[in-house]
Length: 350
Picture (cartoon, helix red, strand yellow):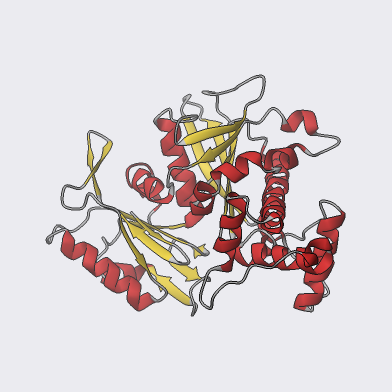
């Protein structure tokens, strides 16, 4: 399983033993590399294959932080220079012809969530309950939604159906709702929206991802200083090349800068509103899930943020929204989902 992110690329190799995933004895550690080019990816895959000492993999699932078209090509939109990666190129690099499955990264994360469900790990120490309704529906065929706020915002729904034979089938449904026009949460957010329109010199409304992303968090922070009494507070000074979004989040988590705290709280309120819109569409009685690297790092802040409150903030459907449990996943899902898809979804290969 290979997870190609906008910044980091991860890989893990396993074997299937009695339908169980077992880590490969020669490759027990998760490999990670910062990759920003097709050439760098080709070198990384070649190194992995060499580590397997000539044992060509029988199956591979590889996911991308970008659109995957027809399971034959992926467009890397977050790399410094945009590249399209074709299935044939992956085969030429040594991945198995006819047994390599290309996925979007949120599809892989959704499969990782299905693996947790298969292991009865919802809830668990790696899938923490943020909100529990009075009546639970665990074990029933129930839809789920998954959101991954970080460098950008990834969203996916998982639809559950019972077949005529009584089997449960669960399928990820790709979502791009994060690119819909934002609507103000309150007066402060309204001022930020207008400030951001002026800053970017655009006539249309920004999207939700303009607020829920690394750059979005920086813009919220800058906008709070520009549009409120926050301009009297001292601003954080970051060095050249330093990730300002990471710095703002760290200050908020540690509660050492109130503007950073307000910025990150608004960030997660926006995540909550997107989750609410998805929940009204999918009716996720199986749960609303947050995942991703920043989610793991910001776990303590999310617990005290207004994220859950914003999920429920609907005057007409508040009662319905309170039927859906909410979880924070600290398990890395993409590699887990890729390995799960190796045993459950290889029929999707083209």
